[in-house]
Length: 202
Length: 146
Image (cartoon, rainbow over all chains, first blue to last red; front, side):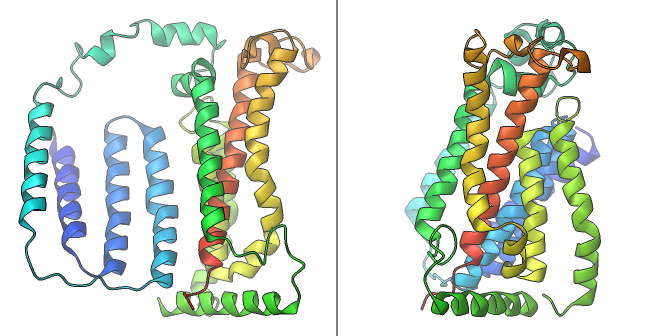
């Protein structure tokens, strides 16, 4: 563990506690963005640039925008609660202790005798070079070729999730049913202006 | 945010490079880190940035919801269609090796595996871009509860 590891992990912990404690939702959304960027840096430290990419783009970029647009629809504050909830606190503490106890069995970071380094096949990386005719990125080879079925399923999951969001949230003035008359057009114009104003206020 | 000239100019400068970077991540994913999902999200984030700065109307002129809606399904179709194509060429479903030597052998098309991965990643990228953009449209298009 060098200084950077400790600094990033400490900042992650501090940010997580802050998100849990803060009552201003707008600030909480900003802190989740910071948390995403910190975990992206942590993934870079762990030599997983693919995951880091995804975390930075999805976690810090798009989900922050989506949460901000949700806040624009709902409100910025959270209702203050006075009383301390005892039972949830105990549950969380016990679960946390169990999880930490579980990590005691895990191998150390970078240990060459990790099951992950021994189990599938030590020559797997070299084998993928031959199978893929020289494609150097093993991650892509695994995702798209060795586990092509999985990735097809994942893509279908993304499509299904998108369709579900659309079914819940969409307004029927755009998309396939655009022939609804002048009223809906005016609504969309006013809405664009309103969203612009909301952005300006921020 | 149309009233802020700095934000407007900076985002206009940045958006082409974000799009370029998305294409780089998409088509260089076989060699470096990246791939369809990351590229799709980066591409969608460029569209979303445009929408945030210039308004929902402007971005919907660039990427009309009717088109994006169809692209959502088209990406999965490209992916599954690659599988069906390999079956048609006599292999198993998503068995990219049969793509070799069937297409454009004079043009140094790398290999069946490479071609298959390329097509599949394209499908993933299209679907992810479309879904992310569509979710943004769905959120931004709603007014405050009346």
